[in-house]
Image (cartoon, rainbow, N blue to C red):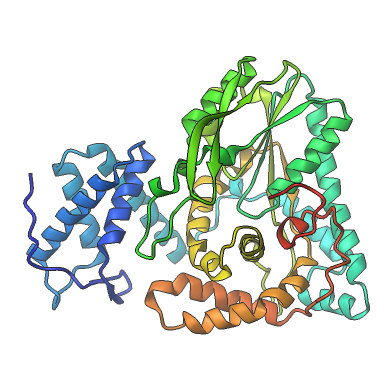
Length: 453
């Protein structure tokens, strides 16, 4: 057992690029706890105790005049985990470090993303549609808005989206009797909720009985999620959900058994077990709307032939004023800002500073499974950009300045700068009435006829 030296407290560490940043014991605690959560552990006190041991070793080997590198701190974490009898946690921590190193190497060598994770055929279809409607560049869209075409842009965009949803419904209906589960998956703010409602509507017209299983009720209590030095919870990972209980309940429902669904209170961040009874008929289809619907453990052990997976992403194919395609993640970032502010009392600035968690979770736990989807829906609508320009431009301009010289908020600064530059070139639209009440974009700006919150 190692002994602790409490006679000092580190003040700084060196990042990989040589930047000197403030030391944070909470960051170490969070890293240890995250590794423990990944293998089913949830002892936060033990994570804090181990972090203190790590800090003690740092004090014994480094000084405030000669602080350690981040890599050296991580080496100490591995050493502590192994010597304190937490080999499984250490193994996950080591694997995570290796994965992050591989990503950094890939960036440096400008390696291409694996083609299996990119729906090229769907992207090509969206690009052709955008070109045919003069919506493949900000310049062309601005010209159409100047001509008074905004209402037409809304109608054309929604028609393309509805075509996608109906096509997915047709494919599901073809497997009537075989498909027992329909999953609507996709990254944050891609439009899953409204898409799920629309699919249910189309499928019910085809005589299919659907029962929705609300995965949000399977979140662990908020206090069980890792917290960073800013007090922000990482609830974007699959491990934030009780995957084992989800899997158990789905299997029981398919077997005709009655289950008691938990109830999650987002206001308090707590879950109550065994709350709502649920049972389905032999002909019913379970409908699941989930960020991690493609993640293997959720439906582990269930016959793949009984599951139809729909994936939705904001596959916008529009070039900005800089000649580069607008990033899909930036669309979803803005959507979530507006939705969370209106419906969850969440400040847009918090959404920006939390977004790195969203992206990390997507890259690890969502994008690698795109190729397992049975159908892909484009959830982007070009007309959202002029509306976002009116709603959010001033915010991004402010955030860019606020985080410009903050070494702890580099991610937030870079995103704010990129989105501000993109929005700056777009003609703003203040009148949102042309957006149909049936539009899935209303899920974010409000006014939807669907129960989406």
